[in-house]
Amino acid sequence: MFEVNEKEPVIEMEKVCIRYGQGPEILTNIDLTLERGSFHFLTGKSGAGKTSLLSMMYLAQKPSRGRVSVFGNNVNFTNRNALSMFRRRIGVVFQDFRLLEHVSAFDNVALPLRVCGMGEKEIRKRVTELLKWVEIDRSTSAITSTLSGGEKQRVAIARAVINRPDVLLADEPTGNVDNDIAPKLMKLFIELNKLGTTVVIATHNENLIRDFKYPCIHLKNHGLRIIKAGERGSDVEI
Amino acid sequence: MWKYDNLKHRELPLSKDSSNLFLKIMISISVFLFAVTLAGVLAINSMLINWNSSILGSLTVQIIPVNSSDRQKARDETIVQEQRAVAMLEAMPETIKVTPLNEDQLQHLLRPWLGDDVNIDDLPTPRLIDVKIKPRAEINFKVLAEKLASVAPQASLDNHKLWLNKLINFAAGIKMLALAVLLLVICVTSGAIFYTTQTSLGLHRDVIEILHLMGAKDTYIAQQYAGRTAILGFIGGIIGVALAVPVIFLIAHMAGQIEGGIINEAHLSRGAWTAITSLPIFSALIAMQTAYYTVKKTLERMM
Ligand SMILES: Nc1ncnc2c1ncn2[C@@H]1O[C@H](COP(=O)(O)OP(=O)(O)OP(=O)(O)O)[C@@H](O)[C@H]1O
Ligand SMILES: [Mg+2]
Image (tube, rainbow over all chains, first blue to last red; front, side, top):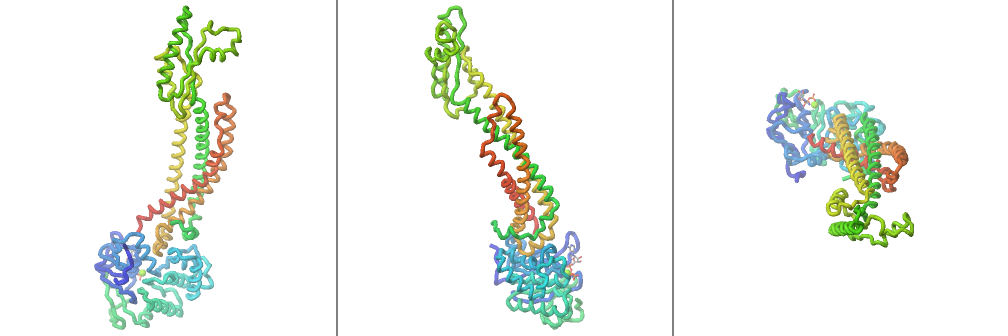
């Protein structure tokens, strides 16, 4: 009954508001459509609501008002099992990584595949390959809590992309990594995008936005504005 | 639904939960109590079966001779009462065959006591009626005794059986009580597992949230809890049974010393021992099911 609808936009928001408890509305009347295969940066000052907006897209919370549809399904009317199935097609790099600290880097990256019930042999092959690619091959069996910030970030990215998701949502994915690996990670996102993955990257990194000509979803004063690449005015702070 | 692969995954660090020790001890005690009580129930059961088979099947009604100076009249009256008792017993649906013993048979029975020379016609001997009862027929001996008394005041039921019948009712009562205790032990243990599982879910909320965000269904998480709790249930069960077996032997030994041979019939069959020693499997199953459904029910309330 709840199915990934290939024809609908991947994510659609209509008059969406977010608030936490009885607090003020962080975002008000957001309208946003992410078409399949699109690539956006998500910008806005600290506290503007970037993480909050993403968290609705990765189905961690429901809007306090308005409609959010994921893969053509209104999340308010979608049952738990279907939401789980949708989450499996959404890769997320969390701002605070949200890795399982007590297990190894390998197990963290393997998690999305295990959750789907993939066989361990296939998992071993895929995870080892990807960890090598993000340059974590040295410490794959190390307990995650012993990794450095940059290493954790790369593990988090590997976990987000391991299952070739339809949507990739990355919250500050290049915040903790060295400058030479940041472009490499961006290339990964771009490669995925070429294969059809819809990508949203929240970032403060001016260089990224300048170097890669993608449109920005800019959050300001509880509202949202799409800025086409190269059209950025002086009023846009990030 | 139960995939072996899923049971191997250990994203939740459940083996470090501090409630594990509590659960293990709790389940050990429960299984201990369960095993001892179960042994009691099974012993009572085998006792009841023995007793029942000894009182069921047949019974003897005695017509005590009427006491009168006129011997012939007394004899006649006794025989009349015997006939009435026979008629009444034959009318009962539970009886198969009612046989009043004739003179020869009575004489045969009495000879060992009286010797060959005595003519029992001269003595006020009781008359006996042998009654065959249908297998599985349940006869209330008290009511039967009263009914007999109303048609034949001289009739009396075999005393031993009447007494055994009371004992059977008493034992059956005890058995029901013990069964209630068994049920209670299961409920209390399940309750403890329910609450410790809920506490643990709260404790690992962040990990569970991550699992959910990765697309894990509640079943995936529930299986990790079920697997862990089943192990605790099994270990607790082994400890509980290991403690219970010597206690059961001790109680059986003490019961065997009671005179009268009543309790002697209360030995545990091989089937009973199999049931008792397989309790760890049941405690593991119950622990597993309880944990599984607690997780499912609790997580349903999350997004
Ligand atoms: N769980 C929460 N409970 C209450 N308030 C929250 C919660 N999460 C975020 N907020 C509030 O919502 C507002 C937006 O937060 P959010 O994390 O979405 O901002 P952001 O744009 O991601 O900021 P940053 O660039 O620093 O990551 C902030 O004012 C924050 O205090
Ligand atoms: Mg943020």
